[in-house]
Each structure stands twice: as structure tokens, then as C-alpha cells.
Image (cartoon, rainbow, N blue to C red):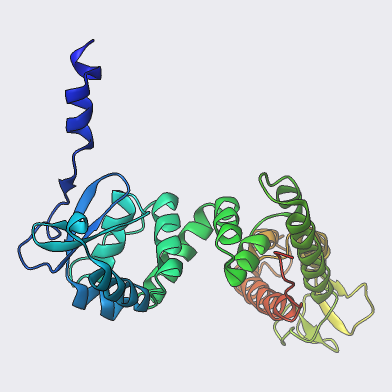
Length: 301
């Protein structure tokens, strides 16, 4: 039998080890043992403040402690989390520099631990990490949000995905996927309807109600019959936004749609760029309002 597979070698590998500082110090009054055998020397006081679940767990552990559950004279509690998860969680609970939630794996570990141990002290920082990863990979964030039943983050992730991408999302239960698609479709209809409204327009040189300083060569009346005049590319933009928002009710669907077409007569490209940016911002704002009014279903029925 080789040295790598010998019983002595296997026993050595399975022997519990102490965690990295500060979870190996002499000021602990409790030991948490990860499922992969790493011992974390912790302060019950610090963790009990951070988590009511930890507080209850420590009281039970002390009351039920036996000689077999002691180590270095301290009660030892076996945990279901692995060492990487415990290390991340404990460093966020302790008054030490908090490691960033740099990967989606880190996010899953922290979200799961925060829910399990009812920890809310760093919700705001965790929300920032979730938003960062949502922007990077909304599909992966949807999987995390569904797994941990985070309704608001499920809603955000759904809207960050085009309908076609959502429909092909792997690993979702049929009922859940159907609920997500129905919600996305309802939001798309609400967002698309905004493009036919004119109440978010303002008097600028290219969207002036009842005539005004619009250039007579590059401007035309609204083909939907309103009294607004604007360059043709504005109406083309709204038509394109109508279709884009139906399939993807999100700012990303429209933010780059509008293309400026400079008029040879008025040559107001700079002003047009400035004002079209205002128009897009107003459209996005109204789309957000419309989508937020769509009832959010229970995605887990």
C-alpha cells in the first residue's frame, strides 16, 4: 500500500486542525468544528450579539456538553458548514476587516449563512454585493435568488434578463419557470405601453407641443396623433423601444437604441444628443414606475 493511501496517512489528513487567526487564539470560550474538521475558537459573546440563532445554540451546547464534546477545555459544537463558509461568516461577524464577496460562490455561502443564523447586521453590505453580481451575471443571480427564496432579488434578476434567455434558463422547476415567464411578460406589456404615452415629454427644441422652434426640415408630427413635433429619429426610437421593452422590460433594452441623425439645415446634433439623453432618462424612469406596479407573484408555488 502506498504512503498516500496508507491508514496512517488517511488518519493524519482527517485529524482536526485549528483555523487561521483570529480563530486560533486563547481568548475563546467556544469551539465550532466545521464539517471538514477545522476548529474555530470563537467568542460566544460576539457571535450571540450578531445572531440569535448562535445565542440559542450556545446555550444548548453548554447545557448538553459532555466530555466527548470538549476540546482544550472548551465546549465544541459540530457544524454542518465547511471551513470556507464558516471562515467567511465569522470574519463578517467579528470586528475585523470583512472579506469581499468577490465570487458568486461567496455570495451563496453568505446568503445561506445569513438566512440560517438570522443575521441582519450587514444586510446593506450584502445587498451591495448582490447588486454587483446581478449586473455581472443576472442569470446566475436568478439561480441564487430562487434557491434562497429571495423574492425581491428574484424579481430584479428576472427583469434583467431578456425573455428568450429566461425561457431557456436551466435547472428551474416547471411551475417556477412558468411563474417567472408570466411575470416577465406582464412587466413587458406594462413597460411597452409607456412608449405610447407623451406625458413624460418636456418642451425642448425637438419635442415642442403645438409647434414652436422645431426645425421644419428634420421634424415631423407624432404619428400617433398627439400635438408633439420631433425629429423622425425620436419617433423611430420610441417605436423600437416599444418592441424592445416588450421582450426585455429593463433600462438596458433601450439605453443605446436612439441614434442621432444630424439635420443639414439646423445642425443641432449637440443639443439633440443632450435632449435625447433626457428623453431616455425620463422613459426609463416611467418604465420603472410601470413595472413596479405589476403584482409580484409567489414564484415558489
